[in-house]
Image 1 (tube, rainbow over the protein chains, first blue to last red):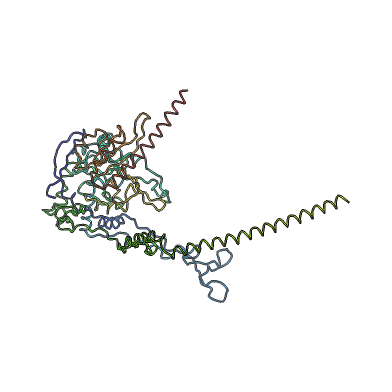
Image 2 (image 1 turned 90 degrees about the vertical axis):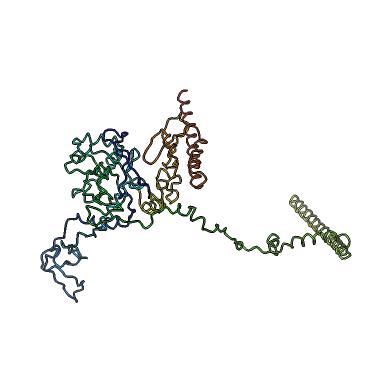
Length: 406
Length: 147
């Protein structure tokens, strides 16, 4: 990027007023976005707040249980010694047993914490900061920023001296950040699971993150009670806050001095960082990642061959040219003419040829003969049917007469 | 920020992603198809128009808002859209009918992205139809009540 993007600093009292119009964006915001680094660092750093816990080492083992061995028609698992109680003779010690010890009982010396290379941690933080300046990423993380005047949102240092929560709330409302706070409030939910009983009753979303610089700032107390809002000093930026859950794009509100401090913290592409000894910002693999633009650029299109049209080698279904005239014409363009000539010849010859006349005469004769025979057959069947009917009539009338006589 | 890079970050998980019944859908306001795909996900692209219904009174001709993604190409137009302005979008209420709204959409996309254009126009037409039906019913109900 040859031109450095510029950012305005807003007045704390009036979101429409701008106190400093064009401040160059700190170089951190142009670090390549590396979700892979952030995800790796986050999964490891998130383990560092864990407190050691373990199962009682004696749990399930406080018996003098012994296996009965073979020959007793029972499984060979150790069984509780003694008598006089239900418990005697019951299986013990195994992870599969009721009241037995768990398999691989948790020890306090489990490796709870993970160390991550400093460089990786710094790259992750830089990427996370860069992502807070990209609107689609903040939207994708789920922050409600439709009323926010600018991302990244930089405000004058006046907010660092806020002491009252009302001031803090009004400030958030003025800058359209209150919508995010409302989201936090309305989506506060009782947690599913046992953690309820262990002091984690509610699941609360993350709202805006306010980043300040001066150590004596009082705004921590002002913003403390606003649900969802977190406050942090620039020098102590935390990946767990910048990319909660490993998801890039927290909505961050910077104070002017905090924003200005970022260049010293992370350095620029020309100078290494002052405060992080020897740290140099990550360089991108591609300076221009916009593939569409590259492909459509003049420089590329000039060198590129014209687009090939898809060649259709053959039909998907084979048509038989002996039956399908169109298929035949495609193979042999002269076939059409041949066919036309043939039909013309037939038409011309139908009247004249002897053979055709003979065939016609034969056909006529055979048809006549057939009609004669069928006519004769018809008459014969008619006569037979009539005879049948006469006999019937005679028979039944005789019957009738006989019945009448009786 | 390049759309490709943003897609790699956002495709796995984002606030608009809804996975249901084996479908990968999106509630992205700039997505007119409803399905989450690289090209239809408008909030990561440089230029997009979302067509959204609004809850409005019966007398409003359409109850549709055009939510246009702010881009450097259309800075003047975005500034002129007096309705709700935000960091990333300018909202235009559709007041003068579907034809003028469709012109806005066509102008935004120009000759490129015909698929996205068509999706936006399709949604515009469908919403308009739904709204006219609703309006008809409400007017009829109001008349019936008067009697």
